[in-house]
Length: 577
Image 1 (cartoon, one colour):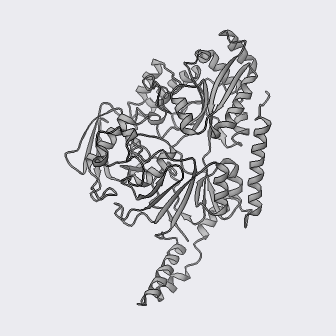
Image 2 (cartoon, rainbow, N blue to C red; image 1 turned 90 degrees about the horizontal axis):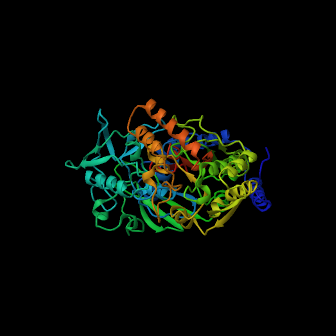
Image 3 (tube, rainbow, N blue to C red; image 1 turned 30 degrees about the vertical axis):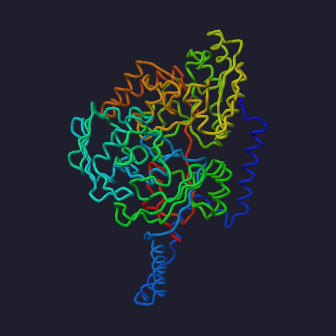
């Protein structure tokens, strides 16, 4: 089997990026510790406890200046002992910009990272995927699975001081049901009783095994009904972002520039006493991964999602901690959308030919630098619902691919349109080169940015495109949307819905069965059968599941490395210096 690589230009770009990263490592102070030692650095940063006694000796001085010094000493003592210290500004950076802050109408990392700081959800989730209290201090699912009762904390207010009630919870759920691209997430909700302002009783049309997971921070922000319930289109509502955004979370908006920078400040009336610890969060949007890496190395940023080419660099530098922990619930799968309405790709034989002409293992090794694993279905390979025994088109076989094209009258070759932007350009070039070997000419069409690309894909203006789609904790939430017949949305469409325009009624029935029971064995059987059918029909080419790394300065304590990673509230994060 001959492995295909990137074009010479692309290889040179990657080589230069790697050399650039190595040069930064050489210039960094104290480089050479491994990742395990980085974890020790974070623990050892506490130092000894002698300063605790020193601070207490001066605690009775009435002089203001001395009192201030005592406060500083106390903070240093707390940091040294490992106790959380309030105050400080944390700087975070990400590539791109934010669309807005209202996660009831929009999914995605760009919305959820700042959105989960300014909005609170009913529940949080621990590392075992078990719900934990947040806005809801208690909850109960009925024995028949047809109702959920949420008991809300009684001291929560929005950033404008208005109390948060069950009516706000109901409004948020119904807004998400009507507008969110994850159609199955709240689809079974029939009604919500808000008679008691501190209790929301949700009635369902059928058991919904993902109903609690759907109340996670990035999926169900509780937004103020008194602001948003004014008859305007929720997707275009002027209060979805901006300096005047009113949320329910631990931080409030201080300044807002969707393309450049968002500054958040501590909300003093947050319903969890003593939280958040941080005074401010700065979220800086940069143009590309190199800017992210350079800014982190220069000390401009405290925390980032680490690009693949930076893992070795930051792991070898004792100023940072790098770990592939957190974001487990995301379950990212990289794939190629094949537009089943495209004339050339309307048959499963043509789509199978495309799949087995692409060196998927080579892509994981070359483009992903070995930081991605095989994933044969749209369900991520760490899930109990992942079926490893489906039709496997990972073994590159050019002769078989050509024969498949011949069988449907496409043996003489054809052209395919492939929109992308800077983020997916190397992936698209790799795919283009692979498909040339079976007579397919791929016209890689680079568009200016993510919004343009997403509009093209949502509108069906493509034959194939490289994409990354998340499982979002449960297949009901993040997987079904890509396959259900009723989630084929006509132009202008919705990104990350059923953008391949795939439809199989048998698959729909199996997905409905899996999404209507709390019995994990029944769910697994249904998902196994559904994904076996989908994999045979190839509406998508599954390229792999990438590892997700975060890098942070050693001063960042109690980082957001739970199952939702950065898409969870940072109210427990604190800085040791």
